Length: 226
Image (cartoon, rainbow, N blue to C red):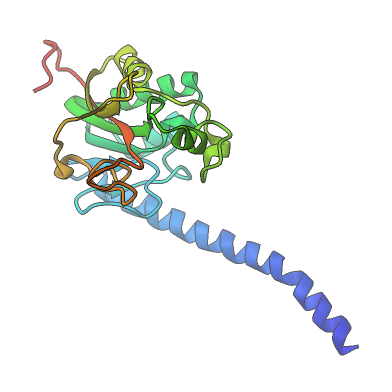
């Protein structure tokens, strides 16, 4: 009898864990929504897309549950058009199809103020190590790679944002010959952790993991970005 009761209780544990997880996620979502509604009206407005709890001071963290790049109603809820100063998105665009990626870039362009910028990073399709490519390719062996839709290089990724109307400045990338290019960028303008400086897989003698990193600026009406 006691064993039967114990088995029934054990059988319920996964259900209880799922309920607990849903309640926790709902609480996190509501907290994030409140914070975004409050801080999203105080300049400067600098937001992190898909933050998952990682956010530098002075930035507003968001997650897909309440700020989905592809959901116009989410944007309308929190922001006025031409109002956001900066958007940071690290390893987000590879989870979108090319068509979705362009739509998301255009939505960011719509809500950034003139002179504002989008700092974005994705896995590097020109990274010279085959093990890296296997790790990050769509359906690859890395964490989250089963949801990757596209593997960009600096050329195709830049073209996407140029097509959306941005002026693009590459910060880190490998070229088609596997040569690494790096521009000293300010962490105050948005930290990319999977980068030359901040990824602990990199050493002084070898790069173990870097990303294609771009700054995409929304021009003023005269075409200038500063």
